[in-house]
Length: 458
Image (cartoon, rainbow, N blue to C red; front, side, top):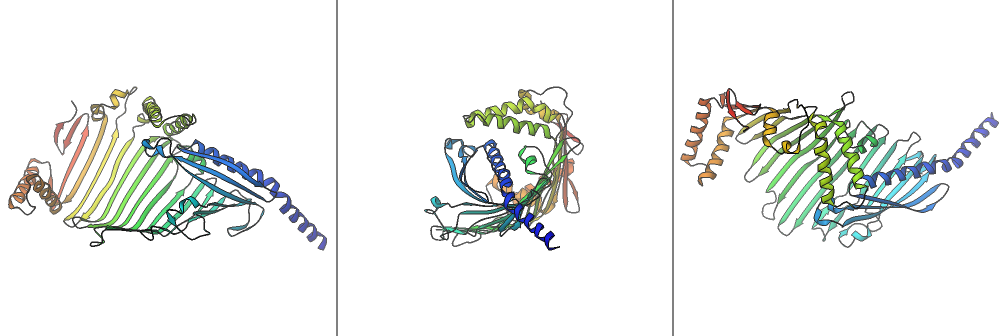
């Protein structure tokens, strides 16, 4: 028995000593792929320099850059650059805070010394710090952070950022948080509390990098935002704001869908107050192949390395016009399934469904730029409902501005009531239990409010 245990211990020890030699090439392969992916992304550049290689460790520097002209063409030739240091330890035995067994553990950090003339954070801390570990199955876990810092002795304060994620061959999960942002400069005050970012994707990084649709969602939101001054600290306050973007792909039809959900618990200002604001927008029947081809084409154009922003715009526009038939042939839809909220004067709710008719033949650029093409080929259905008091209030505010008088003017109130009554009598608006509602349809170049048609296309 002792001999068997001795053999097992010897085998395990040998594995721990020999395995790093085979793990190191896999790690280098991952780094090379990362550099390739970054260089193929619009505006990004990457280069890897190896500083040290050993049996159990590797140290290298990843030079990163971003072309600012991707944000503003006037910044052509200007770049943001940073050097990310990568300290790696090879397994299978790891002495890491994130695990003791795995293929490799990487400590990545950006010292950020060049930023210290503007930003203040504790000495001895890197501006960006991350720990990444790959387990024996190839799954990755990461933890990253940016320290708390301030600018101009507290004029602007940042509480720090913390994030963590898990990445597998067929899923991505990541959460990040910023507790507080504060601006206190002269007469300007701004506060942003508890900003959160979350990704929950049921596909791997290769699907995301392809440019096509994936299955999953990305969300971002904050608990509170306020803007004001010394005398009025909260001229504007927004609570409970969030955006959730969901991507879906039907693998059989290869058609994708994007759903964007905006929500705000409440908004407060001196002139405006609203609660439970919601907007949900859907884009459906979108060709996955179109977006895959678009990504492939844009990568090929950018691979030239000498393409100006104007040339890139022209090339991508040409691609879109040459391939628009693939996008339009599946009758894409743009739907607003919910637009609602509650103001002090009342509530409102609206929906809109729009889709393209089945278009036969190719579509030219001239047709795309002709509004009549869309009026003849779009089918739209819209329903709007709101409290009578809210519509009356909004009508009075608009008319008062046009007449350059006050909202409480008897003339303004009389005119608004006359207009609303006329619309009700003519059948453009229906009034039921203090609710006003209307229905608008567009088809074959003609609009219709309930049963009353009116021409749109020439």
